[in-house]
Structures are given as C-alpha cells and as structure tokens.
Image (cartoon, rainbow, N blue to C red):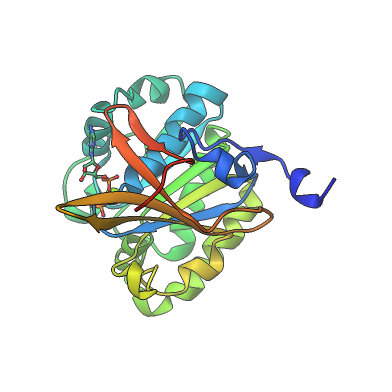
Length: 249
Ligand SMILES: Nc1ncnc2c1ncn2[C@@H]1O[C@H](COP(=O)(O)OP(=O)(O)OP(=O)(O)O)[C@@H](O)[C@H]1O
Ligand SMILES: [Mg+2]
C-alpha cells in the first residue's frame, strides 16, 4: 500500500468528481476553486456543503461575501437544495458577509459586521464552525475578503493566517477565487492563493464551434494521484456533474 491510500477522503458530493481524486479531497485540506465569472464556483462550493449534509451527515458553514444569504438561498433553491431546512436543523450555517457592508438590514443569525479586522473576521468564522461542529467550510470568495478587510496589499498575510486557522479547525475547506485568464496561465487573482491552498480545481470554458463548453481541470491536489486532463462538466437542474470518461474535443 502507498501513502496516498491511507489519507482519509472527504466526498465532494459532485457526481463524477471523486473518482478523479482517489475517492475525494484529503480530509482537512484546503481547496481553491478558481475560474472566470459564471464558471460554476459558487455552485461547486455550495454543493460540497449541501451534499455533505444530505449524503454524509457532515455539518457545514458557508461564508458568503459576494451575495447576501437570502439571495444565495434563493439561487440554490433552483437546484432543489433546501438550505433553510438544514439551517433549522443546525447542520448548515450561512454567515452573511454582505448585508452590513452594503448597509442593508439583515435578519440572519450569523452576520459579519461591517468594520472587522482580520483577527475578528477569522475569530467569528471559527466560532460558527465550532457552534455547529462543522466538518466542511466554504468561503466565497477570496477577492471579497481582500476588499472587505481593505487590505489588498496585505492579502498574503491574511491568507496565511486564514490557512493556519483552517488547519487548526480541522475542517475540509473550499475557497473560491477569480481566474480572469486561465488560458494564459493566470489561474488566481493575486497569484498567491494557489500556493496556500493544498488543492486547486479550475472551472473554465472552451469555445467549440458556436458554443462554450464547460470543463474542469485539477491543477493540483496534494497527497493525491490525479490526472491533468480536462474533463467536461455540466450544470444541470440538480447541480454540477462531471464526466470522467468524457472528452473535450
Ligand atoms: N438552476 C440552474 N440550472 C442550470 N444551470 C444553472 C442554474 N443556475 C445557474 N446555472 C448556470 O451556472 C452559472 C452560474 O454559476 P455560479 O454562480 O456557480 O458561477 P460563479 O463561478 O460563482 O460565478 P461568479 O463569478 O459570477 O460568482 C450560470 O451562469 C448558469 O450558466
Ligand atoms: Mg460565485
């Protein structure tokens, strides 16, 4: 037996994905999901948490920094995912990181205040993770942390701190970021997110005749033997599906 098989695996909840990474994400790992706008980052991340509860009974926290919790719930309902039901059961917690910043009232249970420093921001997430005993965590997205904390120039320190605290919490996490031009090798906004994350999944489009096709590429996954092929995926009415035996041509 080789070491890679001894690492416990966390199922992604995305049909077709786990077989590309030896059965799932290495437990406790931090994975960056990157891609251009509309590529499916939020859907991938929320599916990881939602299916984590539905299929594997693992509680999860979603930190939403780009859209308000109410909007996220509504969008995800379109996939048939009733997040609210699991929130009532204490298995999902959404941290609303938008309302206070844009000056809208929030009736959410978990709200990030408008003027937080890095420590308070991380401490709040830590508290909510502990409160519901979360095993999975999503932060959507990294660039909005930088804007929010008004520390774009210090994003490296913030990410290092974040990484340390994620490891300490023992959760398996997905962080999303922007990849404006993945085809030119720029796969993350700041160029440092991919060094901090232990895994990187790129979601992107490729032009084929008159339409854009979606594909997924695992750029890195530590402790994991994975292919470097581009795999087709689709966003269906019930979420993301990857086709491990499909071809991009
Ligand atoms: N209910 C649905 N059924 C099928 N496809 C959908 C559905 N909802 C959204 N989509 C597709 O998913 C895309 C958006 O995915 P998502 O919001 O996860 O992307 P994103 O990468 O997070 O984008 P952004 O950069 O804007 O945050 C839409 O543009 C649409 O093509
Ligand atoms: Mg998004």
